[in-house]
Image (cartoon, helix red, strand yellow):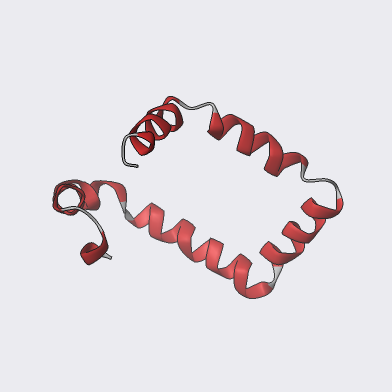
Length: 80
């Protein structure tokens, strides 16, 4: 991945990565993988879609209203 990101982002990984990716993070990632491998994730996604995506739509709306999204949109508009 590092070849796909900026040197600044790569530096950030080196100085903060171990503070973010902890043993607890790894445990949760293993649980997520187990959900994927067992089919639980896919089952939940299918049910979500059958019920018109209530959780998905709520989360999407909340994420879209974060300050970082507005900043990202302004930055992207300057890159064209």
